[in-house]
Length: 484
Image 1 (cartoon, rainbow, N blue to C red):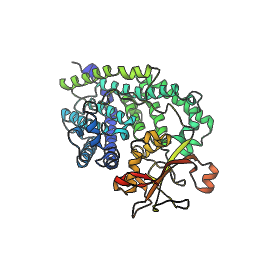
Image 2 (cartoon, rainbow, N blue to C red):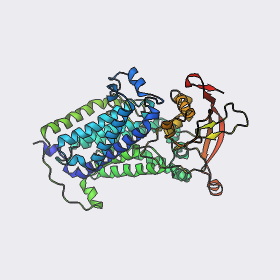
Image 3 (cartoon, helix red, strand yellow):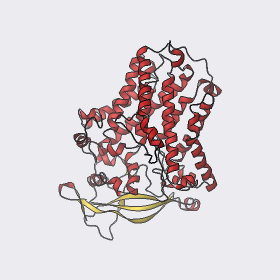
Image 4 (cartoon, one colour):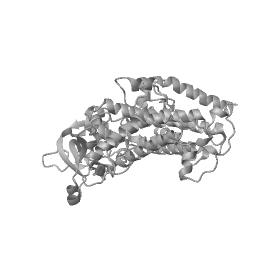
């Protein structure tokens, strides 16, 4: 009856790519949460969940951890989510009835929403909301029991449109360097976590940087409208999005933001385009959707239409917000980043010493991080789509101490104790046998070396001391840091 307008059988492979990919990102997100939470938000973490749920009601931040919290329970939630995501990524949702597959996707969404809503500052990134919204839409795509619903595919394109168009608008309204095409003279060097190719991107000729920025404007401000055009125009638009996102994957570390955007682009790619590069048979025949599933998809579409009022108003408004959620369920959000580009890179370098009373002759040893710049001779690493939360927040801390007001001193206290969970977040601990007696932090200006400096000195970075970020402190009464 409604199959003629409800079903989109030509997008069955697009559904497979989108659902398997989103499940894989869920897997990475759950594993990252399991490996990092104890030091960040655990019972004895820098921003403990028990303290948060005691202050913030369920209606503001719905989460299973309002019912109960312990580190063991949080770990169980993370690893349960990882196991379920692995099963779905492997195609397990196609081996069970449609209702079971729908519940599996709903469970993934509820579990990760529970983590994000108690994650506080550590989970305040746009790609957390993007994963939750994409995961919710993946639930509406069904499984092999039915053809992909056309409405769900349009919702995925609408999400992609908001990601791309929102990012384009925030740039044009923000830093003048986006309008004079000079932002990439700085961005590859000053972005939060450069990757292994960022040094080379930074040293591309400036005219090519201008082309990069202009191409970005076209990809984010013009191409998104073509996602809603008939085929093959929509597939061409999706291809442009995929290529530009792969360019961003190569040039930096932005967790799973770029990969999720690529996956969403496949919602606009139909079978005829896949057939150009893959041997394809006719779409498998699917039964019409059961009434309850059709009702679920229609209800999800109606909900999206209603909730779209806020992101549309945000995009059209003169004071556009970046990466904002308008409801506690992180559905139908607004996206966009890098409205402002730094011209200079600053880094906070944490150092410790075994001396109880530091002097001018004190030897300070530097802590190393896994992803953020530190050692001048270490080539930047590729971590995305895995997300190093502490490393990213250290970038914000270097921009302003206000970003680190609630967690930096707790971090220092844990380093003064050689806290095992905290040290696992770092790349190098200079005090493996016993904790330091004092710790300090200094602010440096970092810049990429020149071609000659890299060749002759084997250094990727050059740094200049700016000043003191945190004076030397030691553990005082009550294990609080006291100045030395």
